[in-house]
Image (tube, rainbow, N blue to C red; front, side, top):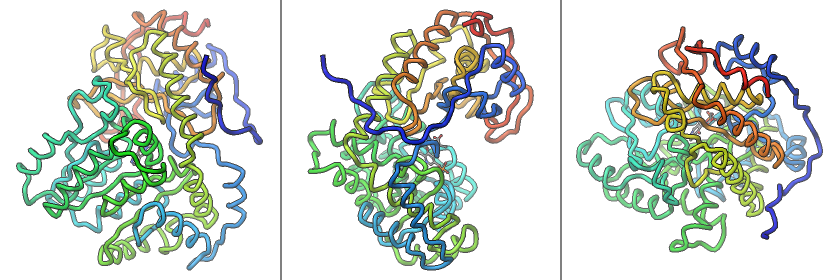
Length: 457
Ligand code: F0G
């Protein structure tokens, strides 16, 4: 028997989990209008809503925070962050921002996108919203069968579709965005070969190439272990290779920089950097802090130093594969290979008695909560609106360095109890909600009661 891959950390500070029973959860869910964003954290036992900003910082990161320099301009913290980020990305101009989406907005402003199109392997929803707010249209070009192909790098840009789009939109392509890993497409990784092919076309046609790098380390680990044709000497060199092909990057530091808040924007071009400086100062803060405290910059710098550790990344993938395995043994169809940051369940396929407009993903997410206090996230028609053509998924995201194997065993056990009554899970309808980004605040009602067995367990 191979030895288990252990969590490569010990726990020094603990946070209690508030244990609830089924009756309490039924009440809480009703009060939250069957929208899991409406729950208070204390009503949740295992929170798998997102891996964003929910990680546990290391002792070295907390120590780095004490070194934070809170000077308004020219803080030492900034120079430490700049040094680490330049070494990783090779980009000369580095700007901190308060989140990834602020970096996206500022870049979209500075590039003047009005009336143009943006091509991508998969735009995250805030990236798409920022592109649209700047007057451009975002087009996703992942392979149509990406979620079911089980290919090792199914997060890739579909090159045939990309070439066709380059023809169709010739002269109107303002930028190309490669998202690694591809969060909206099952969190699937992107191969370095694919990034090179995309970069080559961008060079030939003088197109601006942006890397959405928030999960750059998890992507680099997959490339390092599973793309032998392109083997680099180290994990770091693999990650650097992605950045070296891009003209700019945006990054939510709340993922692979393992901090609770922060973002980064980096560019190579001096004139573009000047436009960014003006916009950053107008909306976020001076260029050496970008809306963050000095201590946040130091925590980010330290997180970036830690994340490319092979033992840590092996544990990340082991944890998500273990969860994927548990869910699949319980009879839930999952997207494979599992991403490091999350496991995606195909609720549309599992709850075939529910049509897409009865939100099978939301029904499963509510059932996991009722049965075991697990909070997950629907990624389907509730999130994206009707006629989105996407699958009805539920994402169980794994915060970094937070939960242990017994927590994952618990999630698998709850999913087995839910599977036992899956044919009786009811659909839901939206009672009220805004037109845009409705999944955050919509109020829903089930079309029939959830099975009583769910809260009896
Ligand atoms: N790009 C990707 C691929 C993301 O997954 C996210 C955030 C962002 C950009 C925006 O970054 O939140 O710092 O402003 N994803 C989170 C998630 C919210 O749950 O997947 P942000």
